[in-house]
Image (cartoon, rainbow, N blue to C red; front, side):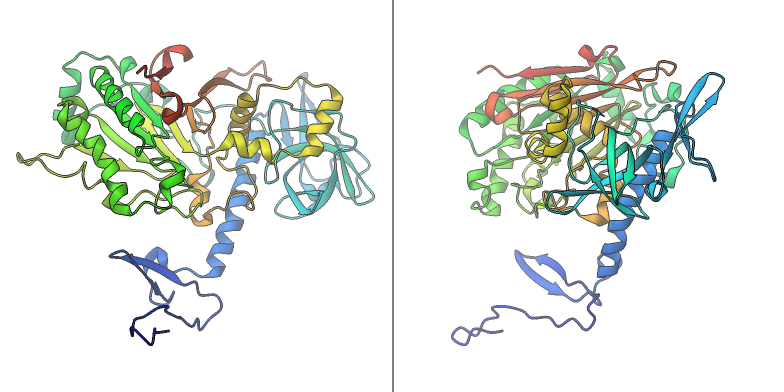
Length: 506
């Protein structure tokens, strides 16, 4: 389609010969070009069938991971056996509860525990489904529920109830338990995200021996005599670099971090305030990133310049180049061309800088850290199923604080996006590996819009015979609002020493 006056191409029209083809987009010199799926190569050559397959694989993997977690507690839960209708099994005094699939409740006269996915097919009508069947459910007879979590559509839950008149009446509701042993060799689909489950935890807790390529770098870091327990990570969320007050606070922050010598600095979006993020051109956005490198250069912050590794993690909403999808893609290299530029002596202003996607995984001296930027507090609270919340209030169950409910929900779901698709669209091709956090990490950083918080989530505290560990769930806070940030010492002893929320006083 051409403009007759100027003779310019206004809109490019592509005809898809096959309905399964997906048009691909290529960005070149600030212009968007469409190419046919048949012309695409590598991972870009995808059809609609591939998207559907990725969608189903994502949910099938979530169910498989939940089953793996449940049945790792061999003394508490067991799989259903052919011809067995009894829900418990005694073994040396211990009673193991049988967990069934959804189709096993049809025609059953006994209450059963079932694992499934909450789904709303009609307004106000919820269903429980797995890979084989979907049944309508009712919360009218709910007698017991875990009040320390939020319940939204798209969550995996364990329900105990009775099926009658085509409706499954739920009596008890809870989340699947976490793994009985995190140090086991993780074999399911070889989803070894951190590369740690084929090694002994005692070995992984030792400081990493330097390789030949980074031997000189490691020697520089060890000259100051920092033991492994004092190796730190700084996390700063929601910078909003366009604000003058934030830029002044950044000067004081980076000068303080220079004396603390962190191994890693993680800068988390939003990098611009919401009111101008959609109006500002890319060149102006890049200039705001140049202010960070200018502070490092003007104040001669040698440690941050040469030794610290910088990681930039975008939000999925307001940062440029993002399509409001989760997980979010990394920022373009164009935006950090300033920090990566070279000085007259040939060295970069900031030597080590990485553009990360959202979420991000870090393996740090044997500790597993996951960082995600999303508005969990607002979205989970808003989409909490009202029928379950009303039933919990009628039962008079004691509810946990709202931030603790957010932390419990994410950890027990084992997934960084427990919300329905209508609330947050998901990139299915990357969701299977990017969003799953099974087995659970040691530290989970949820960069949220709300005030900073820190919760130590116990693992398997309900099972007395198993050792209790903890997952540290932390929100670094909003730096643009109250100048709060987070200092992590992953190899420190106690939780208080490991997680240290901090603030800048101007």
